[in-house]
Image (cartoon, rainbow, N blue to C red; front, side, top):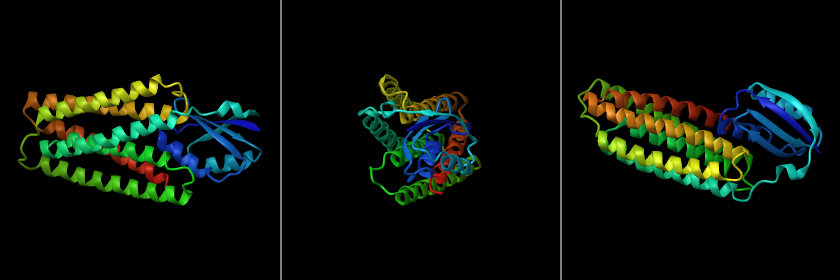
Length: 264
């Protein structure tokens, strides 16, 4: 068995990881794929056929480059048994807060909360795709990716339209206290996820690092909505809420585009 290490310059989140997994799906010579999101590296354990692997990676246009090829051993890629369990918890928490933030955001007239809820949903979609049942076909995974990506884009476009409508109308002020309270709860939930992932013995594994990156980004967004809520109260204006909503909706569209890549 051989171990080839690739640098993937544009691999910075789970979407690119899933894109690579789908691209290399079905290559019988590949025994295992090991991702290091932080270092933007992919390690492929395989039996020959490195030229085909290189060609398939090049087709993704993620700026891939093979760094080395050496002898590998199966014990190097034994995966911890609790990895999937932790990732399922992260998925469940993200989806639960999508529901919480979407409902409270609509009630509180806060576009920041609504946008943050869609970001949570985007994360949940990515985790769901990567954690689909063993034996699921590549075609099924691509179908799910297409549905998830287009659904996200439709919701984001509706969100952008609502931001524009509210900017030019006399819509009542968002409830800043609800914005802050719900965002603090979401921040606590994401912090718990970070703690669980960082304390895991498998935190250096591919999906765990990817989850850490996603959850860290969620924490930053939560803080942004909290600051927007404080500014809404301080300035007596809905503009901060509309601004943070626009920023997060843009991030949601970027995430949706990455999800759609998985369906190609």
